[in-house]
Image 1 (cartoon, one colour):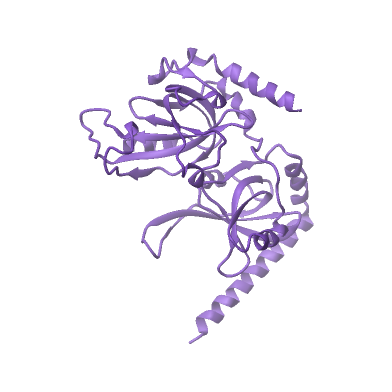
Image 2: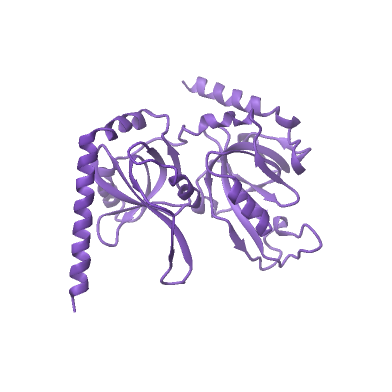
Length: 337
């Protein structure tokens, strides 16, 4: 089975390597095409193709000086090293086991165009991007990857575009999670207890019960605006829908295409913690990767389970009861002097 998987990876990369004569599109001409696993510290500028498995929110970055490196240096005479720059990050995958973070730096217009153009599961081609050692905090704020490197794309020097149709063979990885070892919702209290109540990360296979729209809230502490999506999930161990708060920008976009009862999610590195009101808090954050309707036995079995009318009715009843209890608790608190 492992041999067949490796053959799949080789055939996918071989078909992609002939696209445009290696880096022949946009400003990426001349850069060497590389698989993620073959990157080295001295690779210089390369072309990497893969499927987007995670996406962070575009943001403004104000450098304090020159210490951030040449990816913040001016690209034309109108810029200075003190100019504010915009940035956005994607995580690209090109094999069953290999993924890498691509961080793009440039003007607001360029970065916002990238944000509007590419979503999770799109196949992209990053040309003339620079290979760098991964920062110490990279995996703390992005999906964990086994490579020691990350990629940097600078406006006017690199291009990020949709991959050629032949490179879209990377789509075969969309339904194949990079991690295994999942836990059931009913096991979460015990897992937290074993972790002394400290937050931890787990992998889950769950059925979508409900999903809300993307909404904006204001932080009580800083006054800053944050976007989130509220959703609820079940599995065959627990018919009481668990709330999941989605903080990841890329997963928020994904969530608007999910269909309750029909969508099964393999969620990798879900943050689990004790909720302030008691119970368990689940969050899809920037470290989380979500695979919709993955190609796994657990997902197929859960899909059949979630189609059962009795299961749906029980989940609906439990959800309604939870809302009633919460409303009573809020009213009780409000009436206290």
